[in-house]
Amino acid sequence: MSLAWQQQPERGSRIGVRAMIWVAESLGRPVARLLLYPICLYFLLSSGAARRSVARFRERVLGRPARWPELFRHYHAFASTILDRLYFLRAQLDSFDIQFHGLDVLDRELAKGQGCVLLGAHLGSFEVVRAVGIFRRQLEIRVLMDEQNAPMVRSLIQELNPAVAGTVIQVGGVETMLQVKECLDGGGIVGVMGDRMTQNDRTIACKFFGREAQFPTGPIRLAHVTRAPVMLFFGLYRGGNRYEIHLESFSLEAPSSHGRRDVDVNQAVQRYADRLEDFCRRAPENWFNFYDYWNEDR
Image (cartoon, rainbow, N blue to C red; front, side):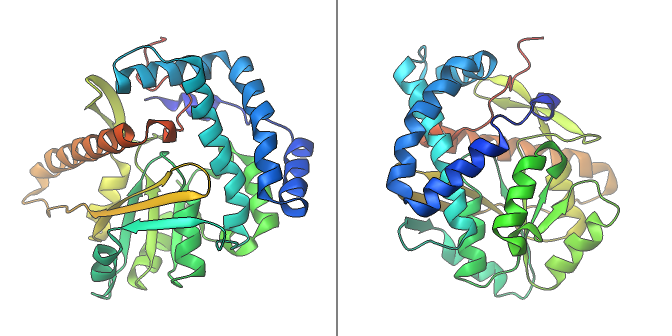
């Protein structure tokens, strides 16, 4: 993993995105999904570097070269979650079949009166987790993310649902830790992705699909500093209108000494990479890191 994802410009145009929003809102999701086919074919053919990265990932997961129909389904899964983000932002959840696994574990943690850190990845959809939390369970969910890399998406989220846009905590901001602590102290949830590094983030080399990849230590260090419990989450897209939200406890032991802290953090990050690999094998089409994850093109 590298900072390559930050160097990738946003694809698409504001006019095209707004046209798609109009179709989705005016003509409905079935019609909008039909338009995904030519859109996905265009991006599949025109994004050579991203296509090669996805093909390399799928070869690692499946143990054989990726086929073109599989690459198309991969792009289509990504496009589907982007389209569905519109409905999640509008709190239009009734037409979706959303299954939960491990929700009782999250409830037990929150019942203790302390908030928790949701540790996820760019695997599937985070928006489905946030939508259900905000609009059905009335949970306060804040999200740590770098908005500077996607100004078009940021402005559209602000337009579609200012309340959701207001839940974002900018990574590296002056008040980042204060906002995180305030949310956790109030019994809320802070979501953070553990599979992409940001500027000035420390990383370690982890085994991931048999090869070394750099993973950030920031999310685990955040949990240590705040002493908050950690839950893994993955909102997997399963085709059509189906999503699976997986939640599981990810316990962190308090470092026995200052000298042990780095060792404990490194072990926890490797455990995270192992769990991420397992869920990638369950749903490889949900892997939405479209760049050279193992730094093999250098």
